[in-house]
Structures are given as structure tokens and as C-alpha cells.
Image 1 (spheres, rainbow, N blue to C red):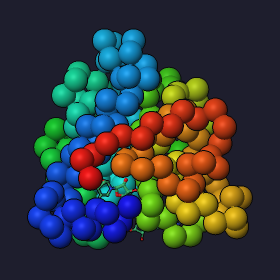
Image 2: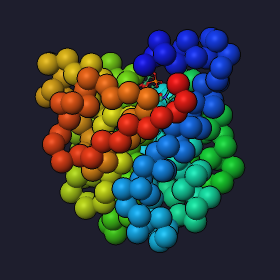
Image 3: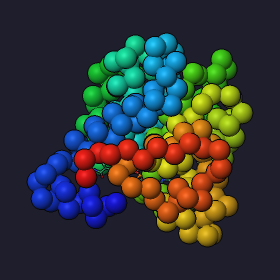
Image 4: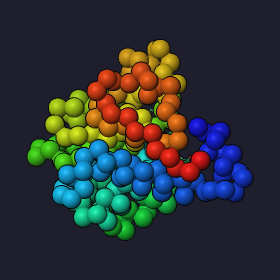
Length: 202
Ligand SMILES: NC(=O)C1=CN([C@@H]2O[C@H](COP(=O)(O)OP(=O)(O)OC[C@H]3O[C@@H](n4cnc5c(N)ncnc54)[C@H](O)[C@@H]3O)[C@@H](O)[C@H]2O)[C@@H](O)CC1
Ligand SMILES: [K+]
């Protein structure tokens, strides 16, 4: 996936920022195709954004949900100073619309009343080690009853599905929206999660 994206960007066919916007838009499409009733009834969405480009996708999704009338709460685990450029641009675009609240994985945010939708844009294919500190947040999300949408991968899942990563703590997911091609991890994911592979023009 990285090689495909890099080749497309290097060939000048597309920019990373354009790919990120398409990923965010594709996530919205997948959500409202999965739950059509929600498309007509905006509610409250909790969007969790991580430090990298997966988080960047999340800032795009937040902005697009707000544009459709959703009440959106964005919580960010990361630092703007270390965000990759495309993610920073989308952080800033969201920040013009609403606050960016902090996320402490050890102290889950208020989840009652439960949001109508949770977007897991914490980590994607860049996860490199287990997310032990996120276990309390993942447990709280699993218990709150809200549908959880994983951007690209449920956070905590290792894209190449290395055997030792199977036991890593991972975010619950009702719908997984991935881009271009399914990754090895998607085949091994929690049963019951719906998977949508969306085209982002690669
Ligand atoms: N142009 C692009 O590269 C595109 C990337 N896309 C998105 O970008 C994602 C990949 O982005 P990145 O490569 O930035 O990676 P991620 O956003 O998956 O996360 C990487 C960040 O998390 C940190 N990290 C990794 N493991 C951690 C741990 N256990 N605890 C704390 N921090 C940890 C890394 O230091 C890095 O800062 C994809 O999954 C996809 O969602 C899409 O927007 C499509 C376009
Ligand atoms: K994710």
C-alpha cells in the first residue's frame, strides 16, 4: 500500500493530501451505505484522531460529518508539532470548525450518553508496537454501545497480521473501512466486523 501510494504521488498523479481527502470521503460513503437511516438523521459523532496520517483521515471525516449536520467531538492523541504534513493540514482545517480536545487513553472520555457514532482514526498501517496504554479506552468504547467505525484498520491491529500481534489490545470495530486493497490483517480480524474496501483512485 505504501509503495502504491508513493508511486502514485511520485508520478505526480495525485498528492497525499488528495488521497487523504478521498480516504475521508470514502469513509463517509461507507458509513452511510452501511447505515442508510443515519444518513438522514445526523447525530453526535466522537472522532478519535491519532498522531499520524490515520489521524489525518479522522480530521477529514470530522469535517465532512460536520458539513452534513452532525454534532462532532474531536479528540486528538498526538502533537501538532509531530504530525505528518497532510495530517497537520487537516487538523488545522478541522480546528477552524471546532475544538480539538485531548485524548488520554488511560482515562476514557465521557461516553454516556453514548455517541451515535465513534470514528477510530487513532492508528492504521503505521502501528509499530502494542497499544497497551489504550486498553482502558478500547474497553470503554466496546461497552458504550455506540457503533465503532475503524479507519483503515482497527487501532491496535498490525497490518501484516504478524502472529505475535494477534494478542495486542485492539479497538472494537463494527465497520472497517479500508482503502484500495484489503491488508493481510483484515482477513484475521474480529468476526462480525463488516469490511468495506473503498477505491481512492490508486
Ligand atoms: N498519503 C498517505 O500516506 C495516505 C495514508 N492514509 C492513512 O495513513 C495511515 C498511515 O499513516 P502513518 O504512516 O502516519 O501511520 P499511522 O497513522 O497508522 O500511525 C503512525 C504514528 O503512530 C505512532 N505509533 C505507532 N505505534 C505506536 C504505539 N504503539 N504507541 C504510540 N504511537 C505509536 C508512530 O510513531 C506514528 O507517529 C493509513 O493507515 C491510512 O489511514 C490514507 O489517508 C491514504 C493516504
Ligand atoms: K484506525
